[in-house]
Length: 145
Image (cartoon, rainbow, N blue to C red; front, top):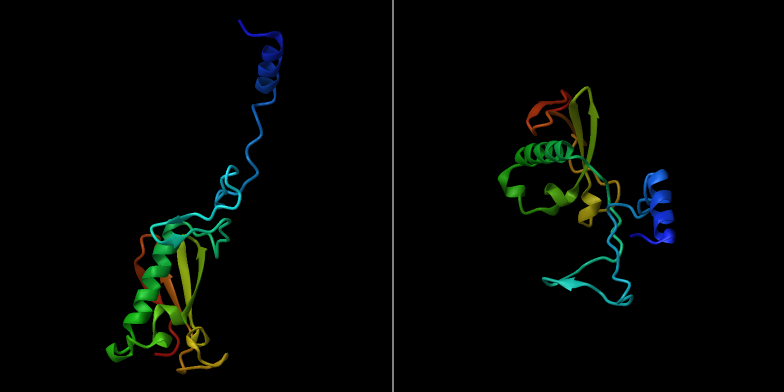
């Protein structure tokens, strides 16, 4: 048999729909309160105490970005493959979605590879692709070669 106090708490929780959900965002990593100063190191990686995401994308958006980036990188001559400015590290990817199609803009960012800010390595400064949610490149925006 429940005690009157426990019964009162149970009835009150049932009336208002239960307890409040945690206010903690789903992407944060929480430290163990038993070890407040402990740093988590696993498999040689020091894991962050609080993860600050660059962006949150759904799966199809990630597939679209990857497909467009691979298409862009495949357009460079093979001898450029070892150059940072002509690699994924030297690119900025912007993803948008409209009418069920992802539009992926890829901007070259040679400044990420040590070049001076504002450096342009080719006349074709950016590329824009239409990509299906399955990751198939449907078209490249018709500007410059």
